[in-house]
Structure formats: C-alpha cells, structure tokens
Image 1 (spheres, rainbow, N blue to C red):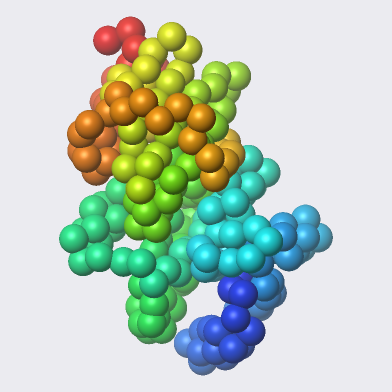
Image 2: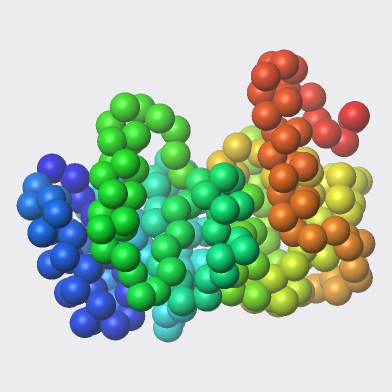
Length: 234
C-alpha cells in the first residue's frame, strides 16, 4: 500500500482529494497537512511515497516544501496543484518537468492517472525527484521573485528570478547563460529558496523556456557521451 501526503491549507480541499482519489484506488493510504511545515513533520515521521501539494500556503509554502524535499528526500516524487496555469506552458511542462503539475479546479480522473503512473514508476526503480528545470517552471507559473541556491556533489551556484523570469545565474567563476545551462544540467540537486533578490542585474535576456530547453539538451548530451564534462569547459 502506497502512502500519499496531501498538502493544502484548505481543509475542504484536502478532504475532497482524499475521498475522490480513494474512489479510484482504495488501496492508497493518505496523510494530510495544512502547510509545508506540517508536511515536513509528516515526512520525518512516516514513510511517504508521493507528495501532492498546493503552492500557495501560509507559514511554509509549496516552494519551500519542494526545496526541502530536494535536499532531504531527493528521490521522492511530487505532484503540484496551482491556479496559475497557462495553456502555452502546458506542453513544455509535460515535456520537461520532473514534477507533474495540475491546474485548479482539478481534473480528478487525470490526477488519479498521474498518481498511479508516478507510483508505478517508483516501484519499477525509475529515478524521480525534483530537478532545477521543473522548479524554475513553477517559479515562472507563479511569477515569483526569488533567489535559488543550488548545491550538487560538492559544487554550488545560484539563480535569480524576477517576475518568474531568470535574470542571472552564477556557479564558480561563470555567470549568465553559461552558468544557467550548467546548473540546469545537474541531476536532482539540493535547492534552497529565498524570497529576496540580492543582485538584480539582468545578465540573462533569453526567455526561461529557451534557457531550460538548451540546458536540458546539454544535460542529455553529457549523459549520452558519458564524459561528465562541465558546460563551463565547452
């Protein structure tokens, strides 16, 4: 039996989701939390197989929860619910995201299929978790202004976002687009989110999706050649 954690600050929504998802699969077991802080407590005391979370919540929101998961539970899959959704981004999200995203009001049947597919992939040993490309897409959906600190295998970097667009990136002595490509190529890094921007200098002018697509292309290229060479050296 799989354990699913449902995180939403509206109790009616939590109850609705649990009851409806049980109708599709009565073998699922559910935990609920009203915000990210309660979700963290649940994750630390229970074995959770999938997190289904809203983004806008008090105390600790969905972004902070996903960032925490990237550090403490890097292979734990997540499904996100949001009211801020555009059809223009839907296709790109489906192509690239390691986090499935559903618009509110929810299509429960589609959500149930996504839950089943995610849990099946997990049982088959497929690597899951949160990558930077997916996190940046959520930042874009919510038009957030923030700084993300990224760490991966002893390396670190940061990206700055303004109104949901990527404006700067830094890793080592590399900045701008090249740094963004390198950071996006890191597989399931640890992410910390800060709701401030220390450096508002715009060094990246390409649209976020263009940066993500190129970063993911470079990631696939490195994986296919198996050389693991940093993009900064290209």
